[in-house]
Image (cartoon, rainbow, N blue to C red):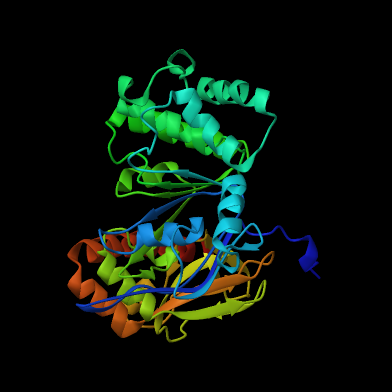
Length: 372
């Protein structure tokens, strides 16, 4: 039995977080009851269209904005249960914030800008702060620019200085809002490489970005659409769908849980869902006339099964079982929703049909080996 006390505290936990704005034009639900858990040491990209709520989501984590409802917990602390002054001091010690437009004070040198958070929370001895600021600037390649003003260095160098400032108090979590939005490709690569280094050193990084290519460098991608989170497994399985289509699928998912080694589908059983694997592994197998089992393949998280049956007859062409080692968590899309999806997305239908052809060939090969 797992000892809950021994489990690591999530870096960030959002519980039913809502944000509602009211003005003369009406009421706007920007965040609609978000649930999100991020583990320590993750490098997470938050992506979404303009106006989807991604920056508001980040502002909830940093405490810059307040939720209308729900809780935001960072490293075990309820961010919005504190008063403003307590929260500001807590933020200074626990969160490093990187802004799209750098927010460096123009009258201070880069070194002095990096020292500011240390001064604000009174961290490190006064005489030690310049040395630490210089060490951080050296880490981001700016030791030779330490005594320059922000407007005398490039935009990429200003963003590197902003990252150094975000690290000034050695916070466990870094929140970055479009950190590469105003940078060229080369400068953007420098910033993401810096983030990679920080994650390897144990930091948790949450980065809002409009650039889908950056998600290839992160360990996890969270997609927000119209104030709601798209199911991450759905987003990974159907990369060619629009955010609106992904959100509609998310609304229509059903969840299934199976113990290790348990049967999910038997051969010739009617199949009514496309199953997406969230956690665990499943084995696809056939049995010969003597009951000998032959495993065709194993499927891992973010893969799916059931597409052959839903597009070719409706009955399972093999046995599907949970791996003997671990439980399996699935989400399912009902037949009518799946077929509607294929009808509305030719690219997705083509991709599914390619998978169908490959898996039918695997099945034929396995049957030949079994002499069936």
